Length: 91
Image (tube, rainbow, N blue to C red; front, side):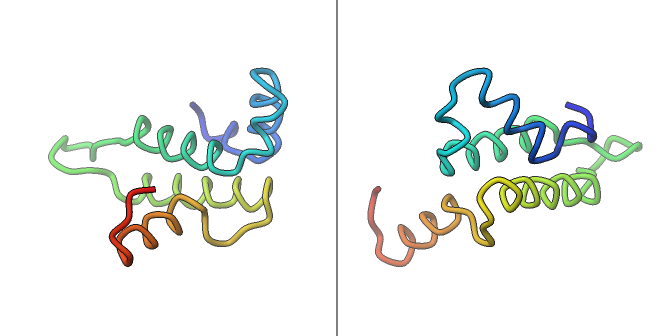
């Protein structure tokens, strides 16, 4: 996926093609963005390490997309992970 397509408008339009309800499902959109982040990891030119600058910029774009769609600051996935860790529950 190229950088131009990492926008809230693009995600809204694309998700509606699959199912209109996906755009209103915050957890599903968060998980999709995290999956796409994992699929778009890059190595440095020397091939020895992960390109953290690229990954960091992509993560920032993912957060901007979530804010653009849901107007949120802290995604549900992270909140659920913190809750599960703190209270040792399996949700």
